[in-house]
Figure 1 (cartoon, rainbow, N blue to C red):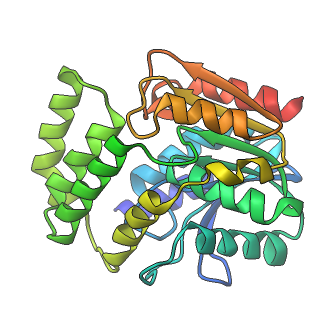
Figure 2: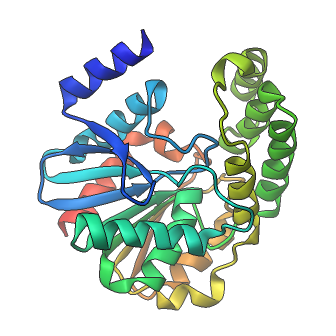
Length: 280
């Protein structure tokens, strides 16, 4: 049934999903000649989006689809130990050079934004503009602690606790977070299925905490837009400001009442700012 729903969604919106030649999964949506690649955030499932993730991809990119070709690109499945963000960036650069064959606009949220730092600094000729959402040159100490705890649950296959712990990153304190955490904890085994390569999540979490890009921020030459919630516990606002100050041609926009779920909670405003940045 889910596969049939996915098929109907893809037919309705003209979405293609699959894998690039180097094994990196993707979803493609849009009609424009300019290309946006969105580097996927932290995930255990290195595969093209399905179900809820596919719907979120549509919601996040439909506004760009008329003028741009948008790719949501994940990571290779079955990552080896020590496959950190510089190596992940090499995979994206290979896709741009060998398959997209032209410079692109790079967008990344959270972990995807961290990887985007390396893509832009290591391969400046491949990037026209950079958009960073809810990310910074390093993860915060609180974010590192929460991710490490979630990884411990994931490794033990305690998927309800794994997902519930991640809600501490996404939602700030309050009754909403408490209710969501309780609900997800009960349904964890239903929400997390077919974990073929459990090492993928563990490798990504380790890569998150190993990254500190502060001394290389000046190497990012592309015009950059940074969007962040002031209450983000995963990427502290001071680190976000340091990121913006370290990139020579960066514009920072902050949102006082939002945390790490900025894109989902304030989607219309974020999309408006991104479109204005792209059209300038």
